[in-house]
Length: 231
Image 1 (cartoon, rainbow, N blue to C red):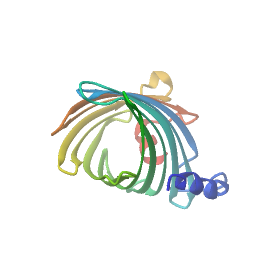
Image 2 (tube, rainbow, N blue to C red):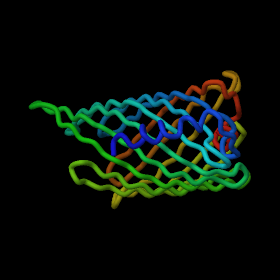
Image 3 (cartoon, helix red, strand yellow):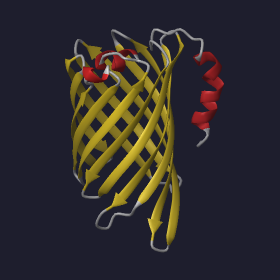
């Protein structure tokens, strides 16, 4: 399972370079750094993403990254590596349906040594575009090699205050741990639409967290709303 994303990408790579699609304007690349803080600990992560057309209204996204978690109180330090593959069908004026797979390998640090673990996550995402609103519904299942299984559901609404400023709210949770979140994302024109800054706050039954991220987009200098709906 852990090599599924790599295998599927290699199979589809010859198609990606020459395909025309109404689901994504052009192949594009981005890199992001993010940090999150909570009572459990601090997380820092780096993510790289490639998105490209396949055919007609179908596109593909491949992402990979690293993360580090520094635990507080009784929480354990850990580090992780992950790779993901998403295949989606989209109509610019209507919405998107996306099927995703993510493989993650994690190492947990104990005083007596290190524990290795890995997990597979499958997800289904739907987004409906209506004027300046994005209505989203997400369902995912994560299963680790230890046998633990978690189900995540999330419903969200985002609104584009301007073409480069988006605010959102979501409700959901993992199994019995309910949560809700608010977020805002801004893409300053002063940076030629190549950088986006995001901030978020998530409240759950078990813990609250704050997050910040910075993304850099190569080549594509488009508005935030076009980036979300056409790239």
